Image (cartoon, rainbow, N blue to C red; front, side, top):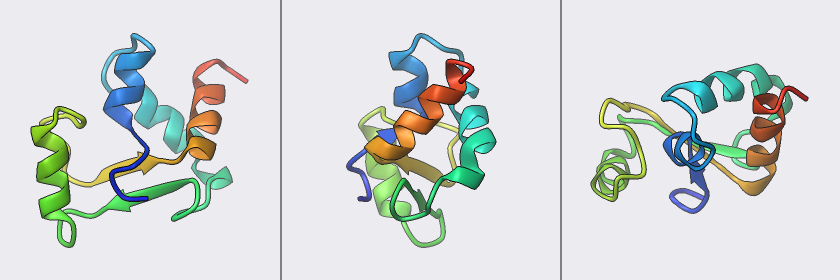
Length: 85
């Protein structure tokens, strides 16, 4: 999946939310999500080049260290949490 998918910044911006709202929703739904299926974590120690590329594209927050990329299935769960469902 890597950079294909949705970053938390993209979700916040698309929905007109303040920074951190998508991350908090992700944390609330984390127990329902499957890593490498619903989301992927790009760890700073192993994916620095990919993270810097995303940062350069403006897809992640400047302060991001580890990056979460949501697949469509993960996005649906996070949006449901943001909608209060």
